[in-house]
Amino acid sequence: MTTDQIILFSLFGLVFGLLLWGRYRYDLVAFAALMAGVVLEVVPTKDAFSGFGHPATIVVALVLVVSAGLVRSGAVFLITRTLVDSSRALGSHIALMGAIGGVLSAFMNNVAALALLMPVDVQTARKAKRPPGLSLMPLSFATILGGMATLIGTPPNIIIASFREDALGAPFRMFDFAPVGGLTAVAGLIFVALIGWRLIPKREDVAIDAAELAQYIAELTVPDGSDHIGKRLGELDETAQNTDVAILGLIRDGNRRYGTSRNTPLRAGDTLVLEAAPDALDEFRAALSLAFSDKDREEKLKAEGEGLDIIEIVVPNEARVAGKTVLSIGLNWRHRAVLMGISRQGRKITDQVRKTIIRPGDILLLLVPKDTGSVVTDWLGCLPLADRGLAVTQDSKTWLAIGLFGAAVLAASVGLLYLPIALGLVVVAYVLTRIVPLGELYTHINWPVVVLLGSMIPLGAALENSGGTELIANSLISLTGNLPPWAILTVLMIVTMSLSDVLNNTATTIVAAPVGIQMAQALGVSPDPFLMAVAVAASSAFLTPIGHKNNTLILGPGGYSFGDYWRMGLPLEVLVVAVSIPAILLFWPL
Image (cartoon, rainbow, N blue to C red; front, side):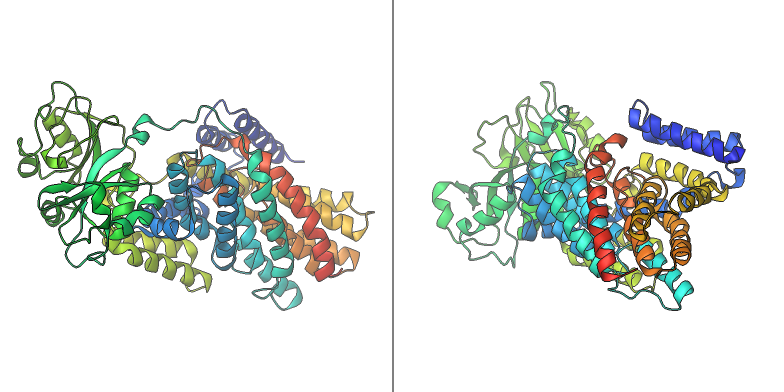
């Protein structure tokens, strides 16, 4: 063992020890290890920051922006309304989302599949008032498992196919992975849905912000040409229930109707009186294509500005608006702001929202021109609530956002475009079409995760270049010389899994595939079962957040620590080995 190898193995041991300890944040630990590697000259200075331009790092950043665009365009609400029910039990929800994720990731890159479903899962968790960490890890694992079933589902399968072409003259075809990968994925999904999610640590300190519980009395208007004109108000109850909105009544010609309005046919210009949280209110509006109560003012805002923001503010005793209505102080004509709703701690509001006298302690939900929230808040003399990332869903751009994303995934799947390039084009298109405002482009990226990946990738490359991974491979060959072929196959899978949990799964495949071919040749058997074992094992990175990009993506949104993954990941990896080895021996005989 060389000096460089000793230093690198020591650095990796120290990094994982500190990450499992959890005392210091993961990005700081990883970056400090990278700097130590450069100072100790085991990582070349010219390669020190190469990880920040690595495709894996770029993909993670782009996926987060694309996910934000899918949320803002209403694509997430569309999937939520049609497939996901927040009232469903957690186990049933995980089973459904896992099945959807597994199928999608078999026919599209599994990173892209998670990008589509992760915001759906987070929205559902918020509506169900449970931490997203209870369901995000099962979703990530499900999308990783689904990618095993086809050639295009995950990069290791593509790499394995190219190695087979070099060794045997023909690559694996699209569905050659299905008998082993598909069977393993089904077994893994069943485990995740029935048992695995119960192993995730439940954090008692995870709480919902008090503002999250705020229910607003708000108004939405039936616009001209609406599909709901002529329908009875009661026919909207199902959508209201699915989006956690309570319909309180109807305003027509300035008069407010209550209980009897359920059978009233809707007309253009009717105003619905609602009680809902901000996200639910926006989802209900997008689902039914309703307008804000001040539709004329809303249209002026859109025409004059670069976009709209939604802000929440608390009214103190000395506020300019306390004891007055927003009409009387000229909120709209002075600052082009629209009052969307009022939260009054459970007390009833009987007047129209914009004609209601505001009291100290009220929480106001305002629609304001882009980047003017602080100015409006200061002018009103109010206090801002903590930013919860509220945004106006642009439901008119739902299918545009889905179409752009689908085209990029299709182009990447058939090899027309490299996945990072395809996702980059989606981001550019989202900005140009204002699905994602330019000012918010970088706010959606989880920078600690970017630093983690950017720091660990050069260390992994240094380990490979120093011969550290080759040393592991040679040791494996010498240790398994006297074992039967099926046992050697098992050992190869376990070692490949271990490497994949530490290194990028692409790098692991590149190192392990030649080792598998060499083992098969030494034993005088077919290389196919060994290549298939490497393909499955390289994709089975379930013990850490850095072994697979999907696990990295959920690290921040799920609120996980580095040591949370192995609790469900370890028994899942054992199951993968137990299912895939017999399947390989059956479908790809030695």
